[in-house]
Image (cartoon, rainbow, N blue to C red; front, top):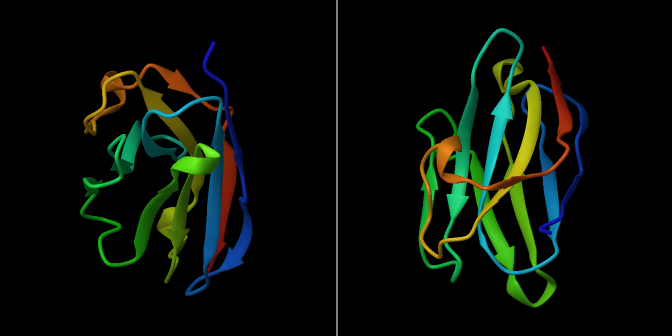
Length: 120
C-alpha cells in the first residue's frame, strides 16, 4: 500500500511563497496536482523517479519548482510569486512507472490534499 502525506499548505498573500512537502512510503515518479472549486484536478508539476526529468504546467513555469530527496522518499513543491488563481487543494500523487506522467490518469496513488489559499 502506497502512502502519501502532504504538508505545508496555508494562507498567504499574493506575491508570497509556500513550500509543500510530500512524504511517500517508497520511491516513485511523483507529481503535484491541484483542484480549484469548479475546475478539474489539473497537473501542476511532475518529476521522474530519478529526479532528472521535470514537467511544469504553463501556468506555473518560472514560479514553481518541484524537487525530490530520494533518501527521504520526499517530494517538494516550492511556490513563489503566488497569485489568487493558485488557490486550490494541492495533491501529491505517485505512479508506479519511473518516467514522469503528464495527467492525473497516469498516477496511481494520491495523498489527502492540502489547502493553499492566496489572498489578493
